[in-house]
Image (cartoon, rainbow, N blue to C red):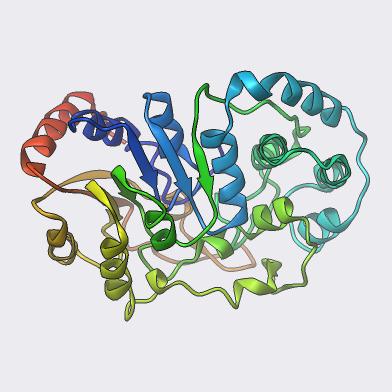
Length: 352
């Protein structure tokens, strides 16, 4: 899957363990699905998952990793991806914008992105099959990019991986049913009753549309006007979420919780966020008993590298290199169920 700030890769065993420890759970909503890592893991564990996100790139990831049923789609996906991977490059919008005017990918790979994406548009594939093919392209480009995992900037010198030839692969598709939505979290939560709703909302001012605007433009293929050194889509200026606002996040969280019809609500939240543990416990108390635990881990790679100016000079010191991720469970007997998860996490945990 793509590199992603806020990814729950290291937390997935604990999240799945918490859900498995709850009684009579069959359906789960991942309301802020991002890369769909959590939804994919929960589907793999046997749950009927609905994954939702407002961005188009995340919706396509959800279609691929949660909604797609492997046996129904893999043969067609393999054939199309094999044909696309053999196409020669042809420079176009992507190359000019993200490889020449900026340095996200080297031009030889950008030309292949252009050719492959234009061909996908011509094929007019069924939506879920198209999503699988688009995710294959997105992940192939991610493997040869020249960033630290965010698209707010790119490296001054080409990364070693950027010299490699971009190669498409079939994504890790799962068998069975699943669902993908593209709407706001409160609207997704109001679609039906769920046994568990998992919430991993934005926690500070950084907007995921701006952080991953290249993938948004790649999957939408609308060739938008761009601005700034990062070549962001102009609509990055327009989209605003209450969860990115220190002033509004508390009310947004409270409103979301009121829209949820579920026996349990599981929340992950970063300690760099606008809400602290006491705030979250108070908000979640409307859902019943609340229990909390936290996990310590390294910050994203850009923080490990440090702060540099455009000339490549180190100009600042990063305040901290580790974070805590809060996990909070709300619902009947939450403390008893999370106590078991804490013990299982301690047994599984390795230094990160």
